[in-house]
Image 1 (cartoon, rainbow, N blue to C red):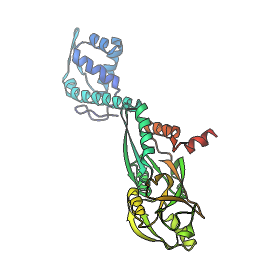
Image 2: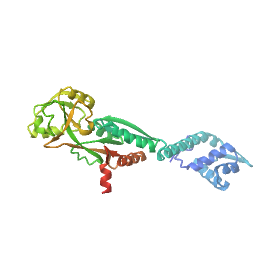
Image 3: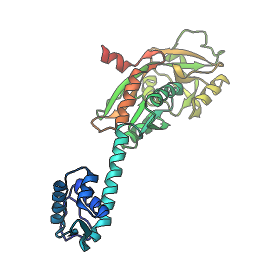
Image 4: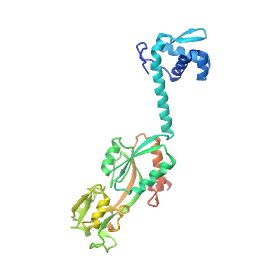
Length: 316
């Protein structure tokens, strides 16, 4: 229901075709020419105008032979109906563009510890096939991204939460990678094939502030009687690697993020640590068509040379 200024008190219910017919008659001042412009019969146009007049409680036109003129009431409501019609046309255009991906903004959060080249490949695939989708990207730690996703600020995230059980979250697994102990090549453990959790007892390490295992791994280390002392704290993996290469401590990093010639990465065992990186959305929340595009492309993409886990599971 829509109330138009200048109309009698009460609600006014009208349809857009009635407004379009009114504006055509107001422009041409002739019912026949207006019907031709609107591609309807003159009786249909006249009935629509009469229905609109009944809603407003008075004549909108003065009919004088073949010509017509706006009545006082018609002149009063004319600018308001012009605005209503213009806004309706604009809304329809936006909806068409949105549905056809001519212009669609997708807000995606990416965990800062994920190797960027994989995300760049995904973005490039979307850009190539759907140029109208605009991606608004942000990176942060997993906890911050999750809060922003649940709060509605983000539509999707790519992240990892070890041991997650939140029923509000829907996850499509993309890839798994083992967590590694990263050390200086001359470290006492550098010649081993793997490093047991107990082997790092008493070592100094570089604490990665954005590590999704922070807190989760602490319990496991405590159960094994392992104590490590943070020597430095870093928000960035490249700084962490540089400090390890300088011999300032060891790091705990995902395998695909260890990109520095001055370090050595060995799998941590007894126990092993793996992270599963997922494409995450809020269960039951309505999503834009652009979300569907990103999901399809993420399932098609080969992550570190392997088919997406969620795609393999669906095929199986």
